[in-house]
Image 1 (cartoon, helix red, strand yellow):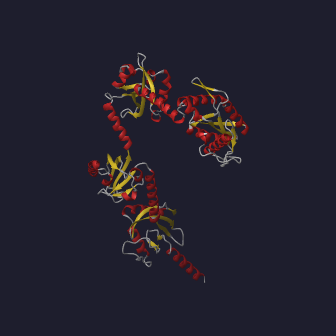
Image 2: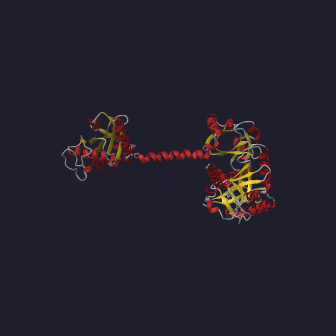
Image 3: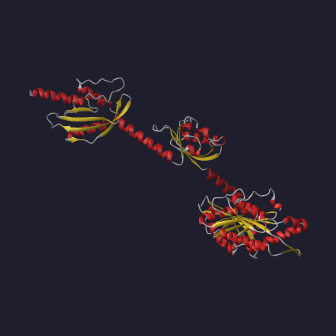
Length: 573
């Protein structure tokens, strides 16, 4: 019974080992193979399933024959080490032939010669190919992510310049998605004028394996705008891991444009019609052209000993210092240059920060323009524009705000009254029988009377109230910050009292009255509604006999408090 259990146990463990994915080999003390498991992790092409369990030595020897020649010595040393000393050896990575090429394996040998049940060296072989493949894939993805996050464009081409890989930076630099570039020739992204440059760089690169060639390539972006790439081409055609040409390209469009402008500036600097200078961070002159020398009245030697701040009006010194501290962030500034004879020259300063190619020193490229005539013209235009703006918002006869400006002020007043809970009122004033004055004395007297009445009304209202002439014989008053409707009535009474005194116009005494409609804002109306309410109340005052005022209701569209609608044209009354 015990022997049967032992036999079953041996068979059990043998089957268990045979089903392991690892290859297990037992070698005796003389190096001969005593046992080999049935793992099929290795087999050359065409030998799948050729393992013969009845011939363990043949199986194991076949395994050792499959080891890569360069790795056979490592395996022999590991087994020899296991034969010499008990315990496991350090794992050894090696390559062995598999069904689809070389596979990466890990071999560990353990000395079990003293174990009576084993009496040999146990060799375990594990397939690491999948682990290495996953690690390679992970590394590839990580490298791809790094290239996509970089600021430079990375391309990989074959020997025929066909693009095999493009980083996603192509979208930002070229305006083209990376997958649209794959399969295209490298020349397709290069402008026609740079095709010869690319061809020359490619020829030099192919003649020098593992070499690197740098060149500037002009490109046309997807939106049609031109660009310049500083490209570095590296020949990896002989490297089996790459087997191509790597292209690293940086967008240097702005840099090259600045360099070109700087070169052109240097050529035209001396004879430019503009005053030009190069200054250091402290504003000290390094170079000055002939126009600026003439403008400042100083030669180059004199200017080299002073700073820009030394030749401007004292009131403009701080302006110049702020300008020099941040020239790229500051709009052009106007300052007064002082000549040695004390003459002031209005000048406009514009600056750009540049860096000298050879020394790397930061310099300010400053343009100085004589704007004396321009300043005089600006002042004239400013005065004219101010006059035009005034005429657009004020009555040409009385100088009072016109209808447009008055309505705007009413809107702001209503907004303030809602915020501060104050009372706003509009008083619509219409002169009684003004047409008779024009017909009797003429329009010149009528105009003079309107100016006199406007002046007298100004004495009757409070400081801060607005009087507007709406046209003809209509005046409208805006009153803010009233205690309530009664205050509006008091103000209307003061305006009526102005008309009780005889008015003298060009030596003539003229008796004149006015009718006033008062509308107090409720907070619900807009400017037009409030003015219309005051206008309606004014009609009621005329029907009441003129030379009086009536209070209106902003929501009453029928003339207010049981009145009848006004006559079709009451202004002629």
